[in-house]
Length: 475
Image (cartoon, rainbow, N blue to C red; front, side, top):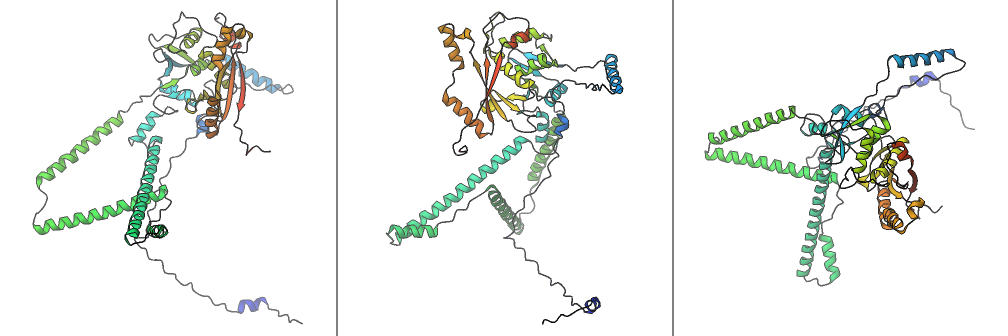
């Protein structure tokens, strides 16, 4: 039988436990050759609170009225008080101002307050000197050093410079490898190795191995080269100075000192002039609205008024409607010319108003070869989910009554298969779904003053097109 040994708690505490001191491990010696440069990480500026900045989806004032609960009389009192408050202090809708430029057939906004309001509440317009958001003044201050951080253009320029440096480093090493291989082949031929296999073996043995370079390795190599060159220049200058002292050349002549003083004073004056220019920096950017955006703000929301650039007179909505239709052609048509039922403004605005009324943020899609881009919340929150192509449709019997009308309709809505394939392929590359909007063009009638009746005759049909990949859709 196995013997069981019992040990009490006092016995355990009485047994001395030897404690060994930790053996100090000598730190590895630092060598200058193994030292690698560490990238300097700069703190990123805090990201703006876009949820608060763009909390209003449209530039309109919305006042909520309390709901009525039948079995609660206090709710009726709250509703009555809210209506009484609206009667005493009627709600005020902010109406912004823009001007129409007939030379460029566009609508411009120059007031800084109006620019920020239209961009922050609905993402309307585009900065004339910016990519999308009108922030030219902020970017210019960052570029000239008035504000912290780097601009988007500077980041792009730096990234392109790094790629260019990577390509140069790769080409240099490939050139070295080719030169070493050619030298090895020439040496093998001179030594009498006529066999092709022995020549190739000698060349491969003497060739320089080509590494797979990255941007980080290229920048590290560049940094090491600059550091080595700086050390060599420093040693060279010290040796030159010691030689001059040994030869008795003495200190630098006063003429050279005078030239250096003049150059330093010139640089200081240039810096002062730059500071003065920075202090007097003005915003030279304006907000450019498309004709569809301007008319939606005027007609759909009532938040904008468009004035004539020549006499500063407000253009009525009916006159603005006719003016934008005439300027949708290139060159613009005269005011006395007859308008067509399928003019570009009517077709594009029908689709714009359709998606804006459904809650989408509609932006121009010319960058991706489409008419519009649809954002769920806005460009600062996420990328566009859908790209829209507008095609007029002539399915009304009026357009098929005569041969001339049939040919006209066929020429207007004809699209080639290669065109559709190219557009769809581009949207697949940028991870967007292609939406084809067919706008039913009604028969032409006399232009009336009722704008709602004019747009009521148009119908929009949506079709989403996706690229079919056989390997992914087997099931």
